[in-house]
Image (cartoon, rainbow, N blue to C red; front, side, top):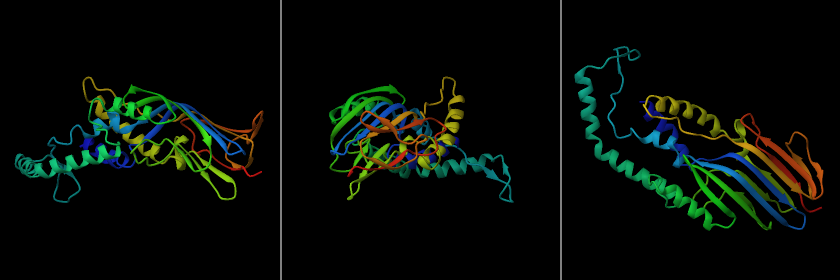
Length: 283
């Protein structure tokens, strides 16, 4: 029953962007008044859809497990009789075709979300590596196992439109690590919801804590089972600008540098607020 509950918790997360999560990283954004910008991310990114956690959530989906039986009051559980278990098994067998169709449809939805990559394919991780390395900015990508990738991303140009990271071809990403939004008056809003380990900045992280605990219990029941790895954000995010910092939520505020001003955030498992800043590049 725990596996079914685990899968029920995972399904909405997997179907809303595969839950990309930063691990250990260093990230830097430069925004200049001449319209130029650069962004770099070097470190870990985990894709839950390719992790052992996702596998554990689905591995018992097609195996019969008797449901709880209850006393007449409907509250107290009791041991099921052989007849009740047989009836449950008969009902479960009768739904085999429906479950098979549902499983196929679910697999197709996962594949569509993964940009055509089948997450159940042993070569899925390598296929994703090759997909990312075709995109501009992804200088190197390697799979470390359990859906955890080590990446080196860097891009620069003119800030003539909004920017978000990461963006993966054909994949609808549920939320970005970093987004840069341009306003008509020359102001730029920067938000980094992916760089908060808990709280309002990244509410999914709290849910994942419970899922991870359940997954660890499932793994420990197996002889050679090991709890899956789930990384938490840990690193630094900095913004360099020669514009005017109008608002930010750093601890120290803007610090002087050779290029103008620097905003810096240290991200760890206790970080509750996602980094945010409003910068005026018109003056």
